[in-house]
Image 1 (cartoon, rainbow, N blue to C red):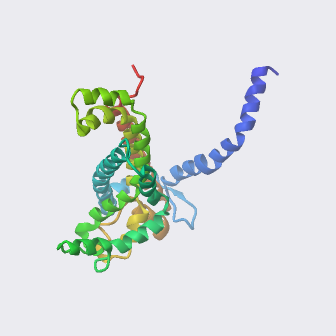
Image 2: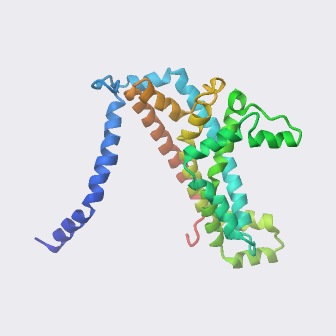
Image 3: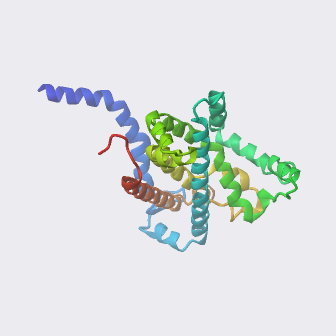
Length: 296
């Protein structure tokens, strides 16, 4: 046995726990869900192959297109808002000489450590029409607050606001990226007469675009898969059954409420393909928009 073969066998043995775990807990369930998407599988009975019927059924499902619209509208507002807020907060936290920087950074990051279900319960109280903190503050300044959880017009705005709960993780990434920008570039920009806003626009932002790309991709994936917040906030609100319904809620209902596991698997694969397509588009666009230091 050659040394190369022995090294190959040794490497496979050392990596075999991960390979077995990958095959059992990721590849096998993924392959099974793909097969189920072509079957009629009521969960308690054996799956029956029906070809493309689940996928063609999605094209004629009004509920499917409703949740697609709701999820895309939510993402279209949540992604830019969360990105803008996190960039502004990160720029402030990265200000040289800022006192108690660690305290403020910890305070911004702390909400991301709270379990999503607990965070949703907090937002459930914040959105309370009578005693919620948001409406109390609005009333204090003379504005009549909306009935957040029972008014279809406010379902998407309410969800977008909840998305700000998790910007702390993005802020930490941005602060780390901003701290890597060479101080000499800021000094040169200051000598050229640039103020703080123009320095951020022309110096900081171009050099942290890799971090922006990473955060936008992860935020896009998370927005398209939102589940816990709308489930807790709107599931028991009659006025929000349609306006607050999201893609993963309908997927969950099809799988575990209606026991249409094959149909739910088809929905999951459509979602996966959309996420991969959007990620591919962003990676392609990043070739021109993202600047890597040291790259030619």
